[in-house]
Length: 242
Figure 1 (cartoon, rainbow, N blue to C red):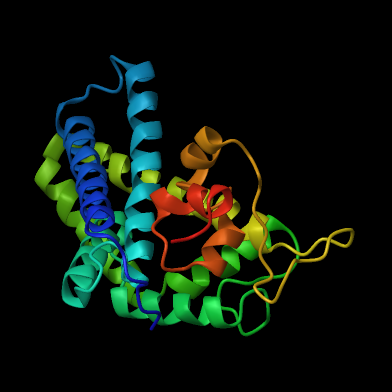
Figure 2: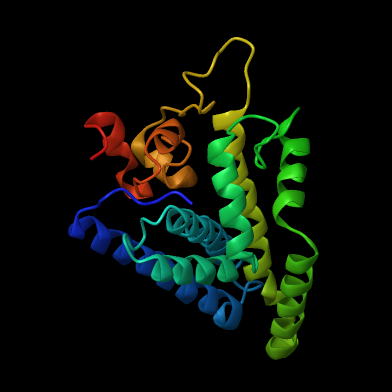
């Protein structure tokens, strides 16, 4: 497992605070959309809620990712694991242990056939391989059971469980495209800069933040400095990693 680089206490507080904000924002919007929003009467508001939940779901996964590298709560592995498992459950019932093993393999073998995140061909086939890697029978049973239970609790509002499932699916596509496919896709006219076989998109910081919490705009930097939390990645290019 990758260990966290020594981090200033203020950085640790910032990571925990931002994680709490993302989790709380997701929970509030989730409850509002599932339990209180009349989507048929307010379709535009429903689309805004769907987009917001998709982006916040992406944020949940990014928090789990940072927890895998020990930088949500530096020096506190149990707290990192607890936060990581919590957000993975909220995201789609994923297993913390399964994901952390595969993610560390991704860093060791990035862009090769030994990389569990790597695929061949176009984005569709690669994405389907990506889904098969992380979504197995355990996840199907767990997520399917939770969805049915949630629908039963909702009663005549059962269709509103889509405000949980659809954002998770869309977020997985967002994470894959901006955080895996574009950074690691081989291109005949472009060679990768080093053994990490990763590139950064070099888009503006606001676009980088909105697209994938900086994991598209600064993906190569993440591989160079895996101890740096998502919100500090822009500094790795502008002022170097601390």
